[in-house]
Structures are given as structure tokens and as C-alpha cells.
Image (tube, rainbow, N blue to C red):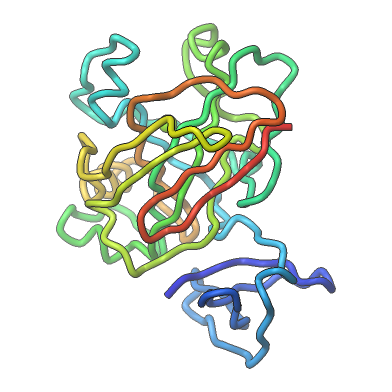
Length: 252
Ligand code: MG
């Protein structure tokens, strides 16, 4: 299934199943286990995409690809580097990313995001994937110049619109081996595969769930490969992950 969350022309928000250019609308939600098709169908052109996972928190992993740690001259972490993005940082595919006034270097970070489907607390690595609804694309947008200034990353990573996710959630892919690419204005910037993750997805879910309860709709953004660089106002940033489509946003 490919899950989307949309606002239709009348302003009604609902979940739906995406196939090709049509969305079969549903009542309920995939995060409450009561999602059911209601017979209404809309064209993708007539629907405004919303972030497909209405997360209470985005749990993000830093330095989870060897080449990204190396480009900062940082050691490979022995335990996951974890930080949170607030729910207010969410943006949808097609939304603008707002370049903050206090930032002077704005970076993209292409990431595979794991979407939690069921409340997860103290889960083992073996059972971790049972708590996953599916996968989507995230852009861990970063005010790079503010990152070292603050000692920790909440300011640099937490601005409104700094967590575009989407366009949809798919349960049809295996997150352990997917091509991941980013482009700015059509020029390829990052190219890797999620098989290069240092800390793998089941480990991350288990580890984090032993610290904080993961709620349905929460996302774990698994880190970015090497090749980060800055963006300017007007730039179009696209992140493509095999089987998950393209997350496209404009800097404004
Ligand atoms: Mg990141």
C-alpha cells in the first residue's frame, strides 16, 4: 500500500491509498487501525498533499553513514547520535522550505524515514519491524552555521518547515537496501544506499524505544549520506528513494 494524507478542495483532510494518479479516499487512519476506503476517489492534481505521518516527534539519527561522518572529520559513533525535531518542523512534498533570517548556510540532508505504526516501548530488535507502518522520504534541513554555535542541534534543526516528509508512506519496500539520491536544481548531490547505514533500522527502533515511547505516526529519520552542501533561495531540492518517489521542495 501507498498511504497519503491530503486536503481536498473543500478543505477536508483525510487519508487515502495512492495508485498512479488517483487517490482512493478512506475514513479513519492507518495509525488507529481503522482506515477503510469510503468509495470516494480524487485525482492527485485535485489534492494538496500533507505530511503523510503527523508525527509527535521526529527522532533523527546523526552521522549514520561513514562518508558523512568523514566529511566533517568526525569519528564513527559507537552509539547512535540521536536528536529530535519538533512536530512544527513538518512540511509536505511541494511545500516551501523557509530560509530563516538568522541562518547563513542552509543544507539539505536526504534521509530514509521509518514511520511507526503502533505504540512501541522496550521492543526487541527481532520484533522491531512489526511496529513499522512503512517508509517515506525526509529532508533533515539544517541551518549548518548555527549547529556548532549551540552545542546541541535543536536550534539548527528545529525551524518550521525543516522536516519535509513524503510524498507518501509505502509498506511495499524493504528499508534495508534502497538507493537514495538528492538533487539541487537537477544536479545530483548525494547518491548512496540505505545498506550503508552504520546503525540498522531494527537496532534503532529497539534502542530508541528503550528511551522514549514511539507513538503511531512518529518517524525515525535514519541519517544522511555524504555530499551535503548549501542551498539558496529559489533552489529546488529533490530527494529520491527507490520505491518511495520524489520529495520535492523549493527554498523560499
Ligand atoms: Mg540528518
